[in-house]
Image (cartoon, rainbow, N blue to C red; front, side, top):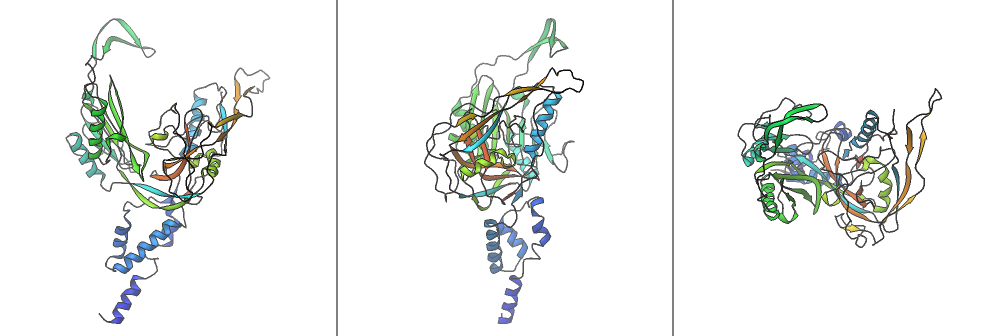
Length: 476
């Protein structure tokens, strides 16, 4: 190879990136679905073909630099939180619920919160490239015969495949290629059939419905599964369906009605809100299971704000994300404009805020340290709540001059100083319905639940338009 040929090849490998990443692609990235091929090396190989190792290293280095200092947000957050608040308000109106006093919390940063900034990694949750092949594997694991087919409710925005009958008459497994690629298995035979006998006289069931039968579930004896057995069996099953799990980390429930187990996806040592679950009937037969088909892809390390500074974001639901099971019940709670409702993301597995104490706080974290699930902040007393206004009820005005029989309550305004925070990863959803894990802070609430907010600096996540309504309970 002569020098002129080598120089020509180097010039071609070092061409401007416009042919690979047009301006229209870069400027429109926040509103587009992330590409399914996420391996940076594989993308570079596809783009460069045989351009050589030099070109591959150059493109890889550029990609890393862009991730560390993005010129555009990684994704646009979904607007679901505002929508959920609006829906809650409408539900209250439709139900003609009389609104009693509720609490409008105003949060402030207590002296125990660290004030140093830090850095943390953002992970994109990417679904498997072959959902039909994944479903075939799941059907094999659960022993469901048949070929994948799309049910009537499948559509391009929610593509779904299923194996087995859809009427609940036999085992079935279903997978959807949206969100976290959730799947679920069900075997109705795992629970004993009710035994029905003629009733001595008609029985009213559910208001006006009348039945002439009495049905009971037969006694099948004690649950044959112990917690230790369930934990081991669940861990083995989770490993077969894509979630390697240490049995010691599996959460288990065993009672007379059956057994269940749950484990979360662990990323960077943090258990996240992306969960897999399995259940057995009262006789020990596998009854159901559910999980996801995603893996985490690191999209870069970014600056984060301190736990003290992030308190200001608690009043803005657009920054909310779902924490893992350690902080179950996290979220934005009881704001007057939020219709006093908890807001939870899809597939997050949230439940009612549990009662219980948080972990003991530890020493403040190093500002340059990567966020972890360890507590931060100086040991302190529980957060203090200072009421700043008393609840009241004001009659609705009536043009006819007649007094309204239904008062409208105004909230009790409470200022709450937060003195403890834990760094963790939060599950957030983008405007395309895809999932991300972002660094965040969670704060224990004195009533037993957790508040949560993302901690990445402004610009990493594009926020939707703010909620511009007042979603407060009212009556007609």
